[in-house]
Amino acid sequence: MTESTDRPTPSGFDHAAWQAAKTQRSTRNDLVSVLGAAVVAAGAVVVTLVLRLLDIFGTDGTRVPVFFDAVDAVLPGAAGAGSFTIDQGSVVVADLPVVTLVCVLLAAVLPAIANLVVIVCAFRFFRRLLRGDAFAPGNARLLSIASIAILCGWIADTWFGTMASNGALAAATDGAVEGTPYPLTWIPVLVAMAVGGLAIAFRTGERLRADTEGLV
Image (cartoon, rainbow, N blue to C red; front, side, top):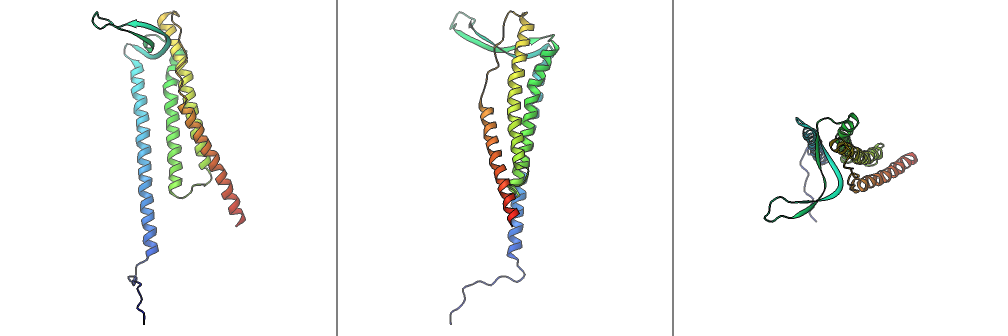
């Protein structure tokens, strides 16, 4: 007679309930981690914005980053003197025109708001993923909002940054120096396109899920 090799299950032990509790605890820990990361990121955005505003609005005037055509300059001092090229810097203007002042504010505030919108959308999106709702209605919308926020933040930074630079140069030099366009970086555009592509993919998944549930 062959003896059974199966180990007896302890009386009163519910393996399914134990596994469910373990999964729930792991999910809760992951949610706390995601929430912590979101809070840290949002705090960093707010602190960076406050520091930038404090730097802009100093006691001696309004400090504005400016961009202009490259000019050659020479390092002071006889020993080891060398030349270099300058095409950007900052000017401090005591009395900026209202339009330029508004552009300075918008160039600092709007990108920060866009970053906060992206952080909120990312937190809600990852929270749904951790709960197993990958293709739940609304996930594609969150990705679309994040993509638009990234693009709008980039446009605001570039557009209002250029206007602020030109206005500050005109006020500081009485129009003697003309500004150049704000330096472009295409990384935010590429990121916005990638997030938008994910939104399309998740929207397709949501549609397939709805069709499948309709057949059941």
